[in-house]
Image 1 (cartoon, rainbow, N blue to C red):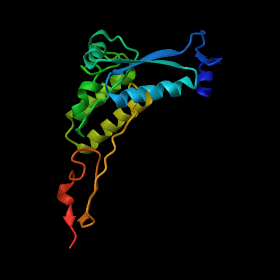
Image 2: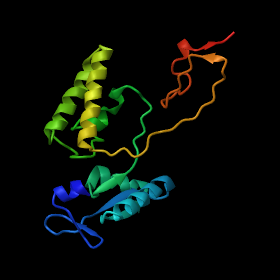
Image 3: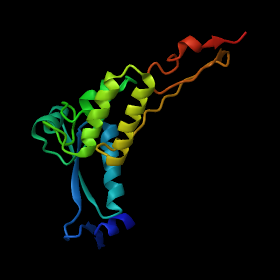
Image 4: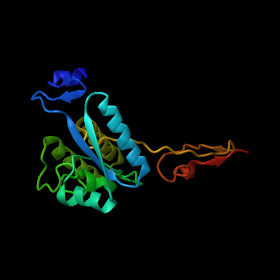
Length: 192
């Protein structure tokens, strides 16, 4: 609440108001029938109510939700998930490039709307063009740093995976990325 107060927000009874006296309120859209997302939206609603923010949860059929996200842009916040099974950042170009189809904040741009988006464009193109794995990782690390600072997405869930590995298998180092247990198959060995 201190940060909100510093930015001119104040609590008026049970309602958080901005510096102009407007009640803080927004809607989160998510797909109907997805119990996990509906539950997350309800938890967000309950948590933000504790600091005076009113959150309206709108559950829509998936096609209507996609239309709002990609055609009309008629939404304030959306709770969805991007699934990426690739470790290589090139598989995420359609999200991170400012001119890309799945760039959900400032969509359909001819050029980046912000300096940080321009920096991400530059870094994503640089990592895609480089053959040097260390350089690519440096570029991608910087993209992730910018995304953390600017928060165009707020990541709510990290995948958890559970696997059983025999004590006879040496050098096992499971990962949340597929194939979780065998991504380093060339280093796995059986104990004698």
